Image (cartoon, rainbow, N blue to C red; front, side, top):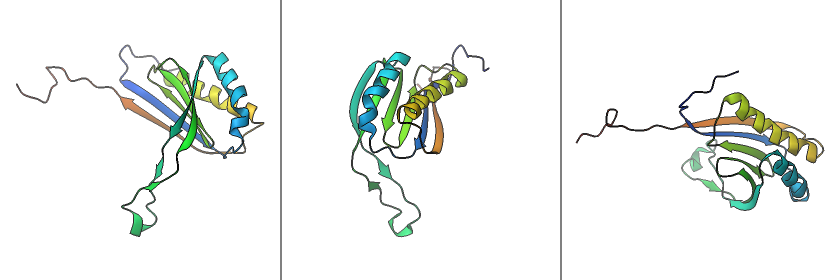
Length: 147
């Protein structure tokens, strides 16, 4: 088990699991919302998410972004510090109240377990990604600016 730092540098932890597309996801939304509410994520809202794709395989179009139509995402939050974003093909967990990796990954797996059990089993997971944004503070001693 990791030891929690008294002043951890992680400002934002973000983890995403991509899985098979669930076209009937709206049918499962009430059951998912209720399970996540019981898990401690009572705030629920639908949000339009704009995405884009960088396709570097086609060199003639490498300088162009390929916008995609806006997607309806569902956000489940615990205040403004912890939350899940659910799309038809992914579940993202975000935390600005980062504890240790074991706690962070356990929460992601609990959310994924809810999706898996609600839809009767995901067919596959395609990709898992984890990103961290470190917090940093400039003080007078560490400032690169001169006065």
